[in-house]
Image 1 (tube, rainbow, N blue to C red):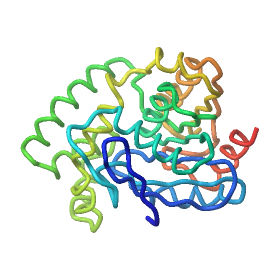
Image 2: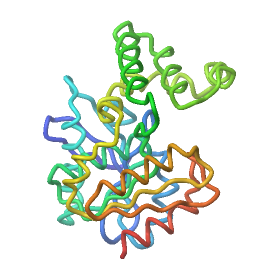
Image 3: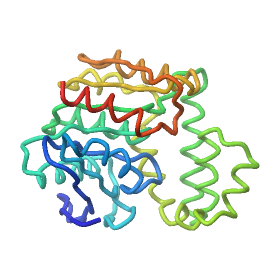
Length: 260
């Protein structure tokens, strides 16, 4: 990351900017660093100032305890201020989408908010599953069992045991263990796991909720419910896409929304 800004609690937040134009800030999913959003950001840099950043506790950004969701909102506020544009559009992926909703509802100068497949529980038993995950994750992190915490999270996403076993022996596993403590941050952002209808109802800007046509039905329903709960919400399906969305398919949809 080329630049750093200082959040309200003194935490340095590392970020990079590509292109020129209205600012768009990309908020990553759980365990990802800003580099994961770089391919998508580059596709929007011809029309926007595309900002990717390492969320606190990841990559080149710092971390300050105790954690609260409000600190991550303040990180976004610091990035908006650093851009000097008077405001910014936000895009969030998966649990990063939940953080975008919170930021947009918190009074920040957000112009528009786009989210891709926020993993809110819209299926029977979802709230109970989230509560069980929270309890187990808290235990594992308290015991510094980072690998087991990562495995727990990956299992929550639906990955089969054989895939997880393969990942534990892959070259990427140490990097995942390094950011395992931030799983608690994303879990806090997700709250009780349900669609945050009251927060969405207070979002004063347009919201675009996207989902992949080849993703599980509950992910599409989560995106639909997110759009319906916002005063100015739009739901859109990207045909043939999954949770691992193709930047080349996603970028035109975001560009149209942010420029409109």
